[in-house]
Amino acid sequence: MSDNRVRADGARVLADLNALRAIGTYKTGVHKPTFSEPHMRSLAWLEARLPEAGLAATIDGIGNVLGTSAKSGRKLLAGSHLESQNYAGWLDGPLGVVYALEAARVINPDPAVNGAVEVAAWCDEEGHFGSFLGSRSYVGGVAEAEIDAARDRNGDRTMRQALQDTGLAGRPRVTAERGRHVGYLEAHIEQGETLERGDLKIGVVTSIVGIWQYRISFIGEQNHAGTTRMEIRKDAGLALARFCVAIDDRFPKACGPRTVWTTGRITLDPGAPSIIPGRAEMLFQIRDDDPAVIERLEELLRSMIGDVNAEGRCSVALERIRTGAPAMMDAAFQNAIEAASTAFAGGKSVRMPSGAGHDAQVLATIMPAGMLFVPSIGGISHHWSENTADADIVTGAQVFVDACRRLLS
Ligand SMILES: [Zn+2]
Image (cartoon, rainbow, N blue to C red; front, side, top):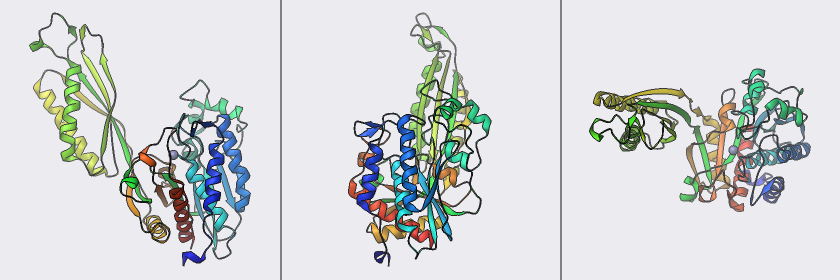
């Protein structure tokens, strides 16, 4: 059935992605921090393309580009982001925006479809100024005070100044019109190697994992590193190091199939080689899409902490500093992507959670949402060498357009 219909134009998709890569090029990737000149030029590029899809374009007061349709019938919202991490890849973000644009160009003029694809480029998904500021603003989750307080993590510029510099200050922020959209669909590179290793072409995202973060503090006794005998030391740094090893021993028996955990910053106080550290602290993160797994691991952490405290040399405290509920992707969206993969990717798809955060998790708070992944070569992302085979980009575009069609029918 799908074969009689107009398909995505693979050459046009590749040309668009390369046009965006030519703005702010860095080696084979791009450098487009939020509100930088190349980022703004990329937004203008999109704004100029949207009328080709019968969409009226706006850049709103937080830097979201939105293309809206006057066509009657159902509306599907689709998109991603156009800024990049610093000195990073060309596809992280633009792939999803160009697929959305292509779906709109193919579907919106088609009288056989009673509905339209509307396109969005969400500002600052990469978090230069905050956390999902663009998509959160669209769902009504950003207060003016948050914008007042936001500043560039890599520079001095405040967000207010950046909005002033880019001419966006004073523009209204567009928020979602409740009930307008059947949902939100986003395509993204996988940024991992599950698809490549399995010779698969499409990842059907089931959920976007939640992130839980902890501060684990150790208190021992600060003392002279030369005169304090080993047997009587209360070395908080050593207790921390042992704890890290113990986590790695015990978590694998309690975790889920895709749980990941990471120790981030470790600090030793005072951290001088001639002083036994009296205090030590580690930031620790767990990601999973099942809150029950997190609960189990948290319980395990507490019991391990109980063991250290019972041993008596050092005391340990656990503090949860961030809780992230996972975002579940809509079942009908997953089915549509899977059916489109059967039609256009030889059925080479797999259902999988996303270990990385995406705007879809924000949109999922107000409407059904879905995501599809295309393979990342070597699983590399957030690096200028990030890439996907042209053939896989084109296959992904066909699947995306067909999934949009199914969701609008
Ligand atoms: Zn991204």
